[in-house]
Length: 622
Ligand code: M6R
Image (tube, rainbow, N blue to C red; front, side):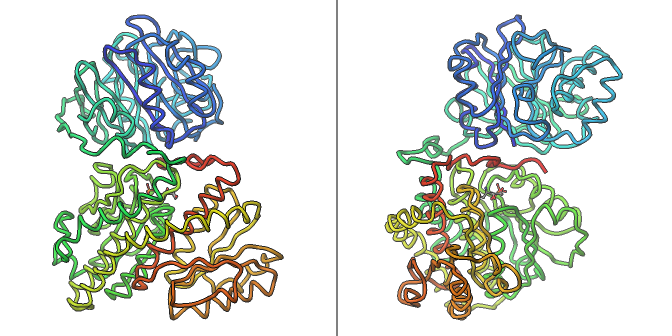
């Protein structure tokens, strides 16, 4: 969480920093701040609470801050409330107030992540005469660097490495030192950060889209490494202070892909990009009608010998795992366990021999998913990451990577990355089934042909969006929504419910339809909205019966079902029909109306669709 940026070069830093931060706001938007150096003058620090435009206003779009070297931050609060005092950058000086203005300070820094042992470090610094103005762990980190810098009279790199050895937790740090006017020093452990270079200028950011407008040449700074960034030049060091070499990577994807492209919100744009995201992902792993996972490095041997699969992820990616569980077990007959990464990382689950652990993540930086991946590797499992962001930490650390090709996803509520993940797991299920002989070649070919039609079917659903827009205006003031389904329909319900609650702030729950009567049905009262997902033939009547139980108690019903297969119109108040596909793949279709419903409900309630309160796109803290 939190986004950090840096610039050093010949141009004025502040406008560039603000522009880069605007592309990182998805990482947090509780407050934002800048620190800019103008040659040997003191660093000028400006901070503001709330969204980035407050900081832009406060600095006259950056024009009020002179200087060609600077760092910036957009915050998602962890330690300390979202206030100016707690906003970054933080300074090493014992200043009064919030550490802003022209501050007399040897070190100024911004941070993304959590310093777990910050209270212990703070005590140590207090004993050495440091005073603190904020509640943040970041101020402690900045002051600890300052402490080593002065105590041992060593350069910035050594002061930072000494600090890194003392700090527990995860972090990406960008620091400026008073004695090094045009340089930025950076360090990372388990939090993302990239450094870009151009003609006599360098950039630093938590994520590629932040600097794509300025350069496509980037370095992915390694874990536990330090970078010394000067205009057009970067040097990297390990914890011993020895210089390391990192290859320069050229970013080939299109910057326009990360812009709104005429849509009112990123989420709506990304919903419409799903056919392309699914098609591109499919085409990268199914070539000439044959599955080709050679890019992942998974061998036939591994695939044939897998005795168990653990799928580990968070949020919507976990919902993809829930859906994949049904598909893989049914097609390939391999037992699948789906675990929340935040639980998995601390559980002592006996690791069966030949377990394949699949970590699903859009960002490839989610702290819990990364930790779960590491735990799985420590326990000897072979690991496969299904990841969207190329070069992300999870992608780099997993044994095998299957990249989804959804392109940059900006809206906090995931849509196209979810759909790309689903299709990737569907192909994997067919691949596993083929390798293990649980489906024959012809059956596999038929399944792949069905998958190839998914993008066009999503397009057809999108053409019908006006009905969902209309229905959302009817339900916009609802207080509670229940999403129910059985089997795969339950997995789809989980995603529908999360989409709804995270952007509309309406309380919603997803329930396995048969479980409702074991307690939750007591919450159904007059006009409580119950949305039944009905795409699985064998379970259809059972779920409809559960919906009727809700109607008898006053429930207002919406059903999602397939064209021509079933008709629920007589039983429910509002029906959405979606095209038919093989039942294993219905999640890819049924989820689309649920995304649209959540989107329009949020719009109807006048909310910030792309940046819902309290959330961040990429959860890089535990
Ligand atoms: O980047 P990841 O896929 O690892 O993120 C996992 C979750 O944080 C994410 O899916 C979250 O639940 C979304 N906001 C849901 O829309």
